[in-house]
Image (cartoon, rainbow, N blue to C red; front, top):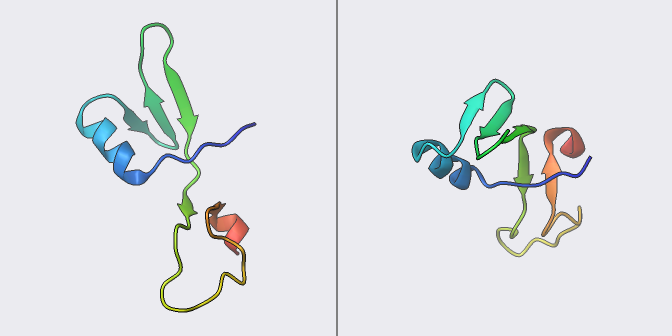
Length: 70
């Protein structure tokens, strides 16, 4: 199944504007018709490394779940 990353800040906006709602482990986005229910699997997007460290783990520009980081 394909995965998508939606930033928490965007989810917060959608919820505050009534465009989406949380239902346990699902983000529900109503629309004309059936709408969409997305299973939530928390993840992190790496956009930079602090300091002068190198990207030894090769995570820059990638999304990783907690299971993948363990």
